[in-house]
Every structure is written in structure tokens, then in C-alpha cells.
Length: 447
Ligand SMILES: [Zn+2]
Image (cartoon, rainbow, N blue to C red; front, top):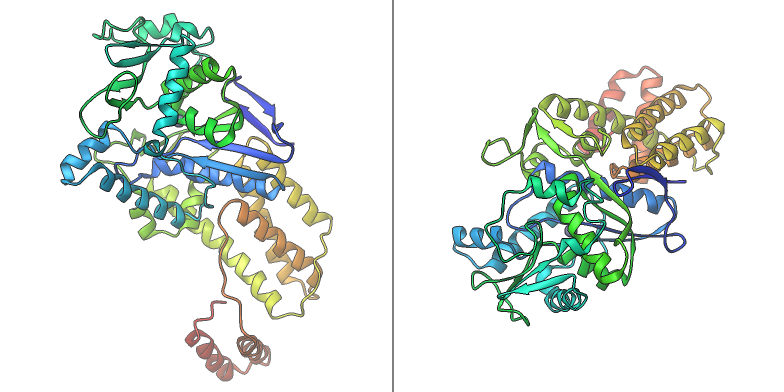
């Protein structure tokens, strides 16, 4: 049974899907005006791992994440680069997708964009207005938070507290200073006609509309970074309660942020680590291992030592996996036989992942796996069915963590070459062994 920490109820809950054996999951995606830094990769890597685990368990998963492709930041970037807003968003969507691919993330089922959902967004705001959850003032539309008795449930604050916390908004046209904008009249940047004015929607409506249009109802999991809890997710819930009569998702999950050597990562501090630049110097397995080694709800403090450690660990896992993989390639094919030890190891991995996706403990299981693999390889009489089962489990674990090391299989000639080399070493014919090793290296075979 998978257990999830639900940010909405602030408790660990058993996961019960809405539809049997299916998972509907939505994660808020990036505003596409720049490359992503490593902090932005945390939800990408983590939720990809969540999806992988559900798939491993046999669930049919529908995974959706949006692109916010209208925003002031996009307008400013277009001005800076002397290109259109579309050129900005196309450029950074492509860059984002390339980075996700380099991080070995599975492809999503849908990546809706705001610009493609404009009529749905306008219809939805009209619905909120008709239900008296929203009101128009001179071409702008606001959501009336006082209409939602549960407003503040996710971020754990009362409306009074929020009012104390906000600077008094000079916009006196709002009924309540914390009412948020659904539509704004503007001639700046891309804009659309609407019943209220020529303008564009605020940020908080798009996800609700996209979820409604793709899933046609409540979903299982809504995810995102912890910085999105308030106001973004709080506002999504308020709109959904008003329009749909439910809180949009059964489980709300939030990952912690990534700090840089103890400081918030920001352009003004000049300490931003761009994901694509980091991927130029390390492999994605190291990157994922580093991120997944910290339980997802905790903040993560990025530093070079963490990266160095992940590099060593990833190399260790790869060597162990490669050795057992090659050993089996050189042996007769056999059916796998999971004995108690392997079954226990598999159960340990699944338990860790089922415990609110405790990837750090799941990685501990991977290290136990490397130990087992190494001990199996040292056995005088090799138990091939057991070794095959161990390799299968090893492969499953790595797949769930998105660290599948692709090893080029040996051809028949390669197999006989490597066998001859083993033979020569066994017979202590070092000269022949050296020659064969050189041939192996020349063919680019990694052993
Ligand atoms: Zn969202």
C-alpha cells in the first residue's frame, strides 16, 4: 500500500486511487522565459520517479504538466532579446524538453499551454462570475476569497492572518485586499478579447482549467514545489471549490526547494546553477542520485561535495550492475529464480518507495543490491538462476529511480573474445591476455 504525505490534511495517508489501478497526476510546470536551474529540476526528477514507481506497481498513469506561456517575465524577455513572445516560449520550451530528456524523464501524456486554452479559461472565469465567486471591476476580474470558507486550508493560515501579512494593496477596487486576479485588462504583450476587456488571464486559473479539460473531474495527485502552496495552489483550490464543488485533487504533494551552499538560489546573488550546464559536466545518473538522495519534502542544500559523493556512488552502482550484466552475458541463459534474500531486498525497496516515496531509503536498498551482486559474483559455483533474478531486480530498481544504465550488449564474436581473455588469464598466459585485452579495448567493449 502506497502512503503519501498529503499537504492538504498534513498527514500521511494511504493512497486510494479514484479509478481502480489508475493514477491521474498533474504537476505545475515552468513559466517558459528562461533555462531551468537545478532547483527547478527537483519536481521534474521527483515526480518522474513517482510516476515510474506507480508504473512499476502496474498502475496506468496519466501524467500532465503545463507550460505557462504568457507572463510579464516572457514579455520582458521578448523585449530584451528583440524577439516575439512566441519565439521566447518556443525557445525555452524546447530547452526545457531537452533538459528533461537529458535527465532521462519519461515523456508526459499532455503538456497543455495557456495560449492553447484561452477560450476554456474565459469560459471558466465566466462560470466563477456567474456563481458569484468572482466579480468584475472596470475590465478586471477578481476572485472573492471571502466566498470560500476554507480559504487558507492548504497553507494553514486564516484569512485574518493573511490580511495582517499583506501590504495594503493600493487597488481599492478589490472587495478584499487578498482577492486575486483572474483577468486583467492590458494592451501590453499578447492579449485576447473577453466579455470584460481586451487582456489576459492571471496565473492561478490555467491549471484548474487544464485539469478540468483533460481529466473531466477530480484527480488523484496534484504536485509542485513547496513555494507554490501559497498563493498558487491555495487559489487553485478556491476556484475549483467554487466551480466544481471539490478541492481539485485528493492528494497534494510538495517538494522542498534546493538551496545553494545554504543560500537561496537567485540571479541577483549570482549563485544560480543551470541544469543544462551541470549536465555538460556530469552524467544524468549522478544528477538524479544526488537529488533523490534527499527525502523530497526536506530542503536540499546543493554543494560540490554532494555532487562528488553522488559521482562516486553512481560509479559504484554502475560498476556492480555492469559486472553482473557482463557475467550473465558470458554464461548460458537461464530462467531467473528469486530466493528469499532477493525477495526481501525487493520488498525493502518497494516498502521504501511506498513510504511516501522515500527515495533515500530506496537508494540504500540499491547499495544492498550492489553488495549482493558482488557476493554472487565471488561465489565459486555460480548460481545463474539466482544471479539472473538479482540482475532483474537491480534493473527494476534502477528503472524506478530513472538511472537505467544502458549497456551495449556483446555480439557473439565479442563474447568469444572476452571468454578467450578470461581463459588466458586463468592459464596465466599474460602475454596473450594482454593482447586480447588490447583487442577488447580497441573494440570499445566496456567490462
Ligand atoms: Zn498550477
